[in-house]
Image 1 (cartoon, helix red, strand yellow):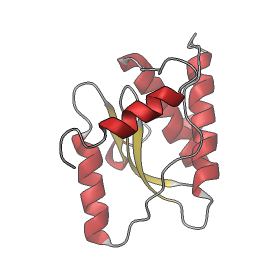
Image 2 (spheres, rainbow, N blue to C red):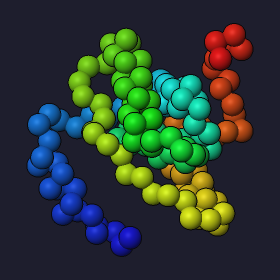
Image 3 (cartoon, one colour):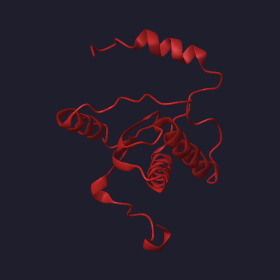
Image 4 (tube, rainbow, N blue to C red):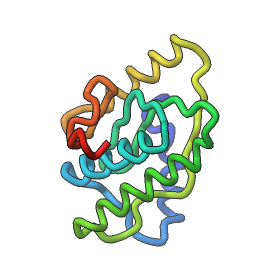
Length: 140
């Protein structure tokens, strides 16, 4: 989209906030990102990639017959609790999530590349290639 095309929508969304927006630091992004991946895997979701920056996340995963919003909601709740256990306070996620079904292989590759481009120096990026390197073999 053209630069500045979402300014009015962003201003409207900021006006609806009851509390100041939360911005995750680098350490918090990694904690929350790992927790999101862990809970999705525990629910049998095949995750391809996930990127989490200071204010939002992108996820590419195969949910098969699972309820996407319910599964993602559980993962967000788990991530919130992991952060809270480490002293994080405040509301972290908005309700729901925007779901865009993948239509074909080129669409999947495009989304994978789009999410990967968000993995700059400040964002936490995970792909299926890395596995769950932070867990002990016994915990899975």
